[in-house]
Image 1 (spheres, helix red, strand yellow):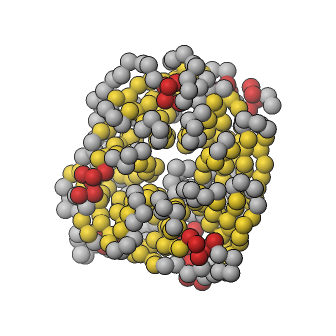
Image 2 (cartoon, one colour):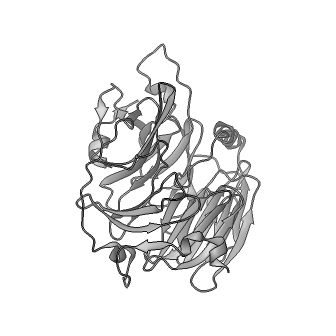
Image 3 (cartoon, helix red, strand yellow):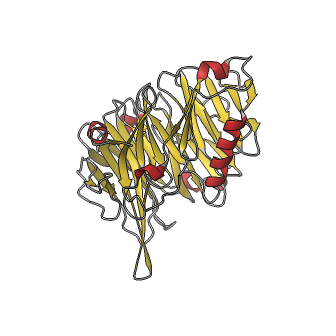
Length: 409
């Protein structure tokens, strides 16, 4: 493999600390800690009564006319957040920072020059491997060792990547193809399956299963053997549900970090987000061989039109772009129009947590290891004297405080 041809970043990376760690946290530790004092102005959220809602911390690098979004990933063992800030200019390297949730301090850890835009980061459970998703004209994933950022494997996709995840030492990446990459032993990539259209995927939290969500059917893959465990057709209700989701997001692609299909924390339920609704499935029914068309346990309506305080104002439904389980009963849902909702599956109660300001949207929801903080990428588009103002920020919320301010709808 010619590293110079496939990855310009291999020659020009500048770690700020010396290597030799046992984990990614050890590698990133040891620098001078600094508190962030930069605040955003355009990225703002409100309660249903239009009262301002302020994050616990705001981290902002909007120093350009059109800055790109930061990419981040929670590192569970060290309870930290690794963030890549990248510039609109190809001449500027991406700057990586590590945010410590214990005291909200952040430190620079490295610079990396790479051709293309960073879209996501993924870290394996041992914190020894780091996957970086970025694209220019094509989509590419670099798999590196977190200790010294040595390039181990490059994965190429011809269509937008919608998901990346580690299972043991194997990286699984999904576009219209599911590719398994073996950076440590074989250093090769294998195509497990392909499809004309994949709406989403979900990896089981305890069992080696991966579910592919397609418009007409779903498939269950065994990550241990890479064999197809089951393929089953959706009911007409879910086909229509998927059809609405497919055409409601035809104008843009979801960020890699967003997930519209996810398991509950105990692995007993599978949630699928669609156009203003949330479908809840019993996982054991879906896995059962004789169940050829599983019916959802419930279809919860989180129609964004219910959030408007102006009764004369009609607000169209928006599809769910990200689902984040908090525990076995509660989960957070972000919609394409910028609302954040908490849903209780057991009671079917829907609580509105955040209402976006004008031109404000959110993506990439992540919980820290102890579920104390919620990290969110927020961004703002606005026009002032015929000029477009763009702002992006990494927002950190105290989850308990955010939930207590929620209002049932």
